[in-house]
Length: 325
Image (spheres, rainbow, N blue to C red):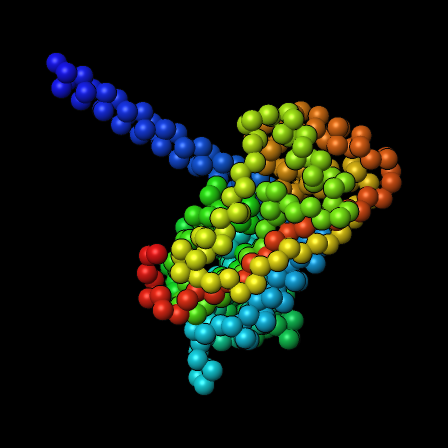
């Protein structure tokens, strides 16, 4: 009887564990579907409203990639012409695809992937338009955009992996970073920038509406929105995946809006806060929006500082191609 009781207890724990794992996977799948739907819905307006506002950080990250490719990339020999393969994760409407192709040259291949079909459509349209220019036509055949998941990147090996403001949206950012290095060419370069879950205390940023927005959500949801400081593990994740960090720094710029309402509409209707409308409904988001707007004078131009973290890393050359770390 004791043996049967023990067997039953072990079996019960196994069933509970399996149910929890299935529930976790279901939550991730549901969240992923919401993100795909959200970004597809807002893709066109996002490109108009937020891509220009985020452009200073994007330019900084592209500049860092240019320096790293010229100085630190070891997987393409200097004495031969070898096409470079670049993978752009969470490519959005494709604003980084042509600049990366120009950094690597017309013999390269640049593949952008995004979870949202609407974003991929926008990226393809952008490629078509930009490459009609006489200076860019030579890059048209080397740039493509496809629907794909940054958590499960297409097999490489890739010489360059690039991601701007996609990492913080993924269900498991640290796991994502490890998967990126698994498909990198030894000696290849990985450059990514993201909005940290707990931004550093930068002078002038304590009054950022993005900070107040996070605090309003925490107040409304309580423990349900407990912050996960996952980016504290980035250094260890890169090292464990066979990489070494070349540069790691915070980059701050100002973002300006007509007023607080313009900010709220931009972020919640055509930006990253839009997904919360799908998760919790318009009433929930708009109520928080009223609280946020009450913190600032109506009709007054609103400029605020915001900080992102940029990491440039290289995969160590002693790692075998396609190896699982």
